[in-house]
Amino acid sequence: MKELIYICLLVMICEVRKVHAQSVNVTCQKGQYPPDPKTKVGTFVINLDLPPEKRWAELGAAKGPQILYLIAGFKEFVTDWGAAGQALINFVDSKGGNLDDTLPYPFAAEIKGLANAVGMNLGEMVLYNLFYEFFTVCTSIVAEDSLGQLYHARNLDFGLFIGWDIKNKTWAITERLRPLIVNLDWQKGGKTVFKSVNFAGYIGILTAVKPQLFTLSMDERFNPDGGFIGIIKWITGNHNETWMSFLTRDVMENATSYAEARTKLEKTVMLAPAYFILGGNQSGQGCVITRARESNLDTWEMRNASGWYILETNYDHWEPPFFLDDRRTPAHKCMDQMGQKNAGFSGIFNVLSTQPVLNKLTTYSALMQVSTGNLETYIQTCPDPCSPW
Image (cartoon, rainbow, N blue to C red; front, side):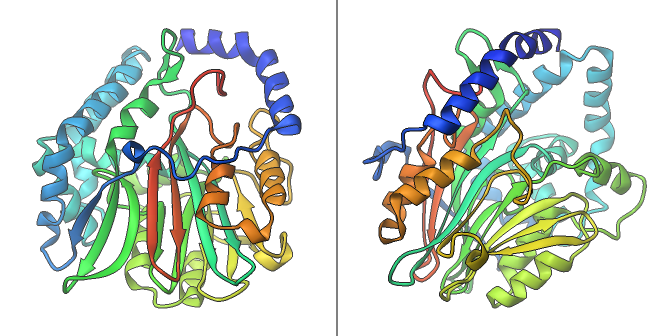
């Protein structure tokens, strides 16, 4: 922890200057799509007709060693906190499994099944499924081309302040997450219900497409009344609110239209604030829903943004982004430079591959087209020089 504080103080002034320069003088990438085929993510099927305890057996067995390696890295990081860190680890290992019993059907059973398939402590598997609620940094875009086709794309960044590797200049948890990235084809009766991008072992939804109906991504919203407060409330017995990732899973499984998905995302009381980026299947259908835990603060329509695209990072769109983390300005510059006629997988992937939209925390870029149900996901890395740090 002391090492991390020292690094943060040491680079602060340089980082401010670098981020400002990147935001103003960004060079938008071209020719990045298609990327190296080796970076393309493979697909597993999740059979929703199976009992919840068995749905994740194949994936858990295939990715178990990588999941255990990730958790070991997280434990190493927490151990550096000293006695407090060890106390947290002991609590999770001995008491964390009890939290699973408070989760709604079918999520509790699925997490138990996953823990068994991986050979992992149940409390650790519960924690693994909750920490994405408040550590995810992202860029999401919904865009409409000149023919009215809708595309939804996102970068998912994860791991800031969780284990800086001085030698390799990388974030340790970010590096351990990349091998866990999978596409999932969620099926009933042998037919696709929706598709998603997940870290193996995570049963919630952060990025997904429901073919011919809608697309969805979630970006973290930093707020004092955030995910940690929600976890404390849940542990102390308040089970009347919904985990963000369980809400998005419910929307993808059960909503049958853009309007129904939007209503659920706007009105469901949650344990953590969030930005929901929702794309539909008709011209003009795209919005960013800015959520507090208990209410919807704002629904920003694509027609009121640029008219043909809408873009969200991790800050309220009516406020300037944090000066150390301005991915918004470069992304807008590159989208505007690309133009509506070039909207599509190739053009948007170039935007997502432009620094600092692409950075050392970026684990993957996902591309979705609602009309075809196509989902392509690519593991992303950002060699030096690249922020943050």
